[in-house]
Length: 221
Image (cartoon, rainbow, N blue to C red; front, side, top):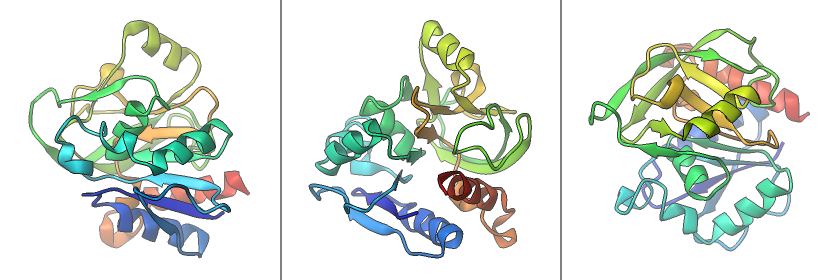
């Protein structure tokens, strides 16, 4: 696997993701500036990291979704390249039209930063194949606009098609139907609000993130 991490102005989890990917693959990830016209030609896994791209000045992820490199990200995603968006990356994927729904202000109107328990809803995707369906895992959240919203028809379709990857056990932000992560209809794009890259060592509180990234690597292989 040859991953690439997209770096936007005010990304703050790009190095965390790069470390998690290097731990899983044994190779450093390419760090691609958002203003670049394209990704390295040999890229076979793309990650949009957490942070506050463009300071969230317009709307979380809205400006980043128009960055030059996103044209290539969208093209590669549509051609089947796996894409993961975490936190702000999830917001960018929704703003770019690669995932349905939107991320709104948290229901409590406060920034939430703590570890949360998730239930694995679908273990058949390449992103969740390291877990069992119904398994509980722990990842941190750190967001102010993490409240996932979609209309009932879209939510019914996501649940009916098995495209909900994770659900919150104790919903920290008011997300519709406790949804913490969703997959596109082709199965190669995942957006999630919790941070698996922050749970890759016992020193950080656990290794559920390690299992997550190794599962992706094994599925890709």
